Amino acid sequence: MFRKLRNRFILTSMLMSTAILVIAFAAIFAFVSVGSSHREKPRLPREFDDSEEMREILENEIELERERQLSSLAITLICVGISVEALVFIVSYYFAEKSIAPVKDAYEKQKIFIANASHELKTPIAAVQANFEALGPTEQPWTDNINAELARASRLVNDLLFLARTDGRTESATKKEVDIVRLIRKRTKLIEARIGEKKLEVCAPKEKVLYIAEADFMQILDILLDNAVKYSKKFIKITALEQGIIVENDSKTIAKEKLNKLFDRFYQVDKTKEGSGLGLAIAKTLAEQNGWTIHAESDNTTRFVLSF
Image (cartoon, rainbow, N blue to C red):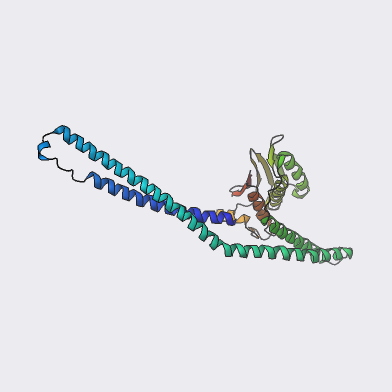
């Protein structure tokens, strides 16, 4: 994330300096070129006034000298431009690193805090849940609510821990040849009990073998399927592409300005639905770490497109 931010800052600086240099150098070259072409031609000595041959030779020499001067100017401007661009790159890199450093430090501290807090919360929540289950069944009406909220808190803590660990992951996930169609059919079997009367369609060939990180793909697929189950009305459709998948459902159309926010942490379009708003954030983090892309589209249906 910070590398992309730094590179974007450097690229912007380089593009601006390049544009300024091109305009300035083009103006200088044009000014010199036009000025030299309008320069008054030297007069021949009186004894050569009537010699057309001498006049032509002199004019050719003047034209060649003008071209040599323009070529020399062009080479000089190119060398100066390259030197200036190199200097701009070094300065931009230095200031980009210096500007990002405080933000990066604060982010690292926040990540450590989230990881530590989540880890510390995980133990007491698990202890409370275990003790609550040890009490055995009761007829108190609020016990189900307590159990549900404990489970929700446990999921939230686990998601926060996962994000903290994933953000700090530096090694690449293990890749291998994976039949994504087989995985899709396997994971959809697990949600059939949850979809009730909704229609579930898998549009895919018999097999589609790709060289990817299986565990990361499965987790992203599970998140997208879980999201589709929660928000769909009548149908869910999974399509296997040449290099990716589409998970589609007939949920309420999402406004364009909200589509990019779907992958922000804790963001929820419909806050009445159960969830922490971390699922899609985890999916995007995993996708980016594998060099994949994921985005949402919404018109008559809502589609999440994962591309490898």
